[in-house]
Length: 277
Image 1 (cartoon, rainbow, N blue to C red):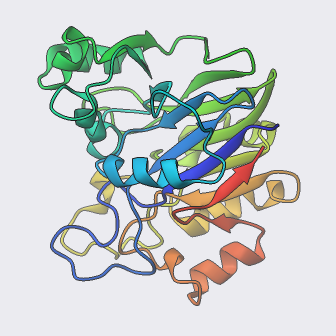
Image 2: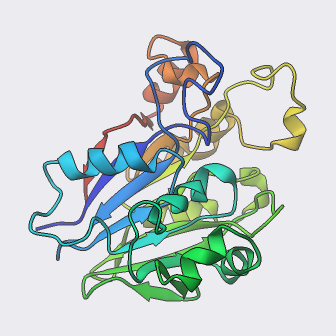
């Protein structure tokens, strides 16, 4: 049996449609999150989104979810301290799932943020989660390890990493929902080409998507820049565009930006997309 991936959320932190909007571009998308099932049956959640309750049900109903388990997850790994990537941790507490000793894998800066703020610290003091620092390789089971790869992204609360999923010693899947820009990360080509599949930041297609916001304050690479930057890799590595904002026409399969991405060999993420590694 091989490791498997299920994309539980292809959307930006607020999902699509966002609160107060009747509709977003394209299909409904939950906030960015991915489930990984190792070849030995361990289950790891990459990012705990605000949509974790619904995403947990989707995970349970997935045909590749291993049966006869006592708990939903073996570990949660967090990329960074922005709302859409850790708010779902609330549902691990005593008011909800009341997990016991669930491994919470994150950078030391994220663990410091948790320890300094409620209600997050109560998850630790109540024993719901067990902090595991993401320094070097973190072992999930004999077949699966996780490595955090630092990337440049707004560090209001914590630093940011992409998550490299390694199966039997081979890098297989790379999860990078947020980055300020590819020009700030010189290792981009080598990291993406080293993985069989990567799910990367495609938040915006245009600087005009949010007319009431200063887009320079919420930096992300535009889809066209990502396509130009990595099109030479798509013949050998599967690159999936995710973390798609509710305004982003990448989610409309008939749009020019979606057609151009597909012609260049990219996949476009959607909730429920599964991958065998």
